[in-house]
Length: 117
Image (cartoon, rainbow, N blue to C red; front, side):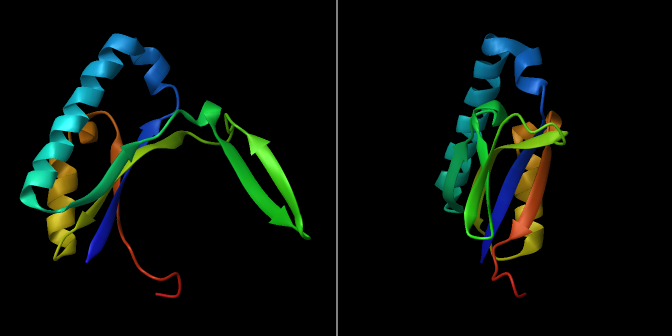
């Protein structure tokens, strides 16, 4: 069963901590990913660029509408994700609680499922 761990971080957090602290945090996350890989539960993971470099796309009446970041209404942004293969929700939640980013972000645990479920 696949589970997505979404790393939700405050929008200004990266700028506030600076490059050196950011590298330290990133290295912690890489070690965490290696640990999950060695356990055989990691399907994939990535860090995402800050929302200032993103764009939102919405198609209305057949026409695309693009909104460049940053997105003013957002208090948090998806900073990265882990896609896991876990037997249960409890296992995915335990992994989320072990994630280093849980100390400075919120980890949202979502079951990968069709939108009609």
